[in-house]
Length: 84
Ligand SMILES: [Zn+2]
Image 1 (tube, rainbow, N blue to C red):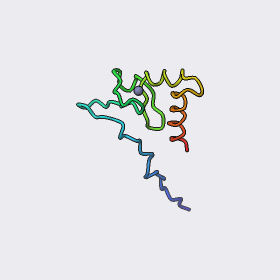
Image 2 (image 1 turned 45 degrees about the horizontal axis):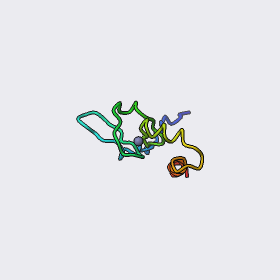
Image 3 (image 1 turned 120 degrees about the horizontal axis):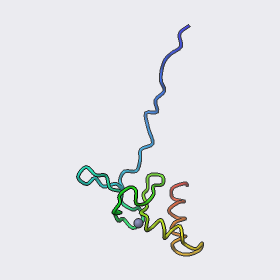
Image 4 (image 1 turned 180 degrees about the vertical axis):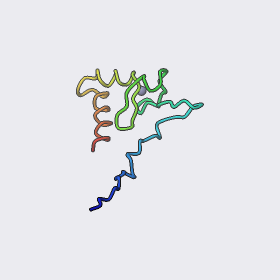
């Protein structure tokens, strides 16, 4: 009785959308998906969602946006673009 010892390896790992990441002298710098700026603190100055990066400034703007405001709708549009 021999069980095949094939380790199933997902050949197609979720390829991150790295198009929004700049390589700068060995440093990987994220570029904000919304304002296309590079935050000073790099990856720690903002948040990533589904491979997209948002700088802390946009994060604050979007998270504090009133429902119905242009910022809020923009954020919902971006998020929907991710999940749908
Ligand atoms: Zn931004």
